[in-house]
Image (cartoon, rainbow, N blue to C red):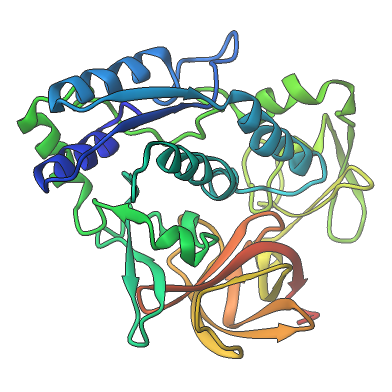
Length: 351
């Protein structure tokens, strides 16, 4: 229970269904000095979670997991940006922090299931394999972040909001009079509330920040920069290049601290590779899938093929701005069938 609308309504519905419910809040992060207060992990969020638990008549406990979150999520996030990659920390948090911690707590107290407020579903396919599936509210669907969950985790996971829309959940929270029902939507990473990524990275990276240069596709020097962590592939604004043709960040060279810019056409790729992919139960490669290369991506049709333990994703049509460090997640209809972190993007001309 984060103290937000989604987990509060999930807990209330479980109580209505007759479950014996225990509310758990994981304290993962403290607000950084000088940054705006976010809508997650603030002291009032824990307070709101407890108020909801009190209203529902269920026990509530808070567990400190700040050290683990810093070590497993925040520090790798910083390292990836310093290498010129764009990580997806929410996937790692769900896989390595939140759900393992909640399952351990569940085992300690004898709880059979763990429930969260994610907008996704856990379903069985036609052959009986348990899989993550899209939530019915496609605007809020969070199955992308859950692709790496193992079958034994999915067997114990209850996703109560998977068939609901966000609007309905908020109205239900208001109707029930739950604390935090009118809180605004959180769009930021929980450890980057109200602050730009580069400010947070600079707090942790210290003297590892290296200045470098911005070059065009021919290698001609265009400008200097204060660190590659300030750039992401596909970025157009804030490049500091002055007047001239519209340019986008097309590649980031972490070894040389070099940012390459070019026309939008240079952002497209027909092939990417994923190391150490996670395949859903029963999936056999090669197969067809619709692949999302970022959370706010509708997905594009592709072939998924095994290349010596590496997942090769070959798109029917070039995809815009796939990025090393982001997750690529494949779907067969609503079912998640494969996913992993992008480790290589093959330029369209090469692919």
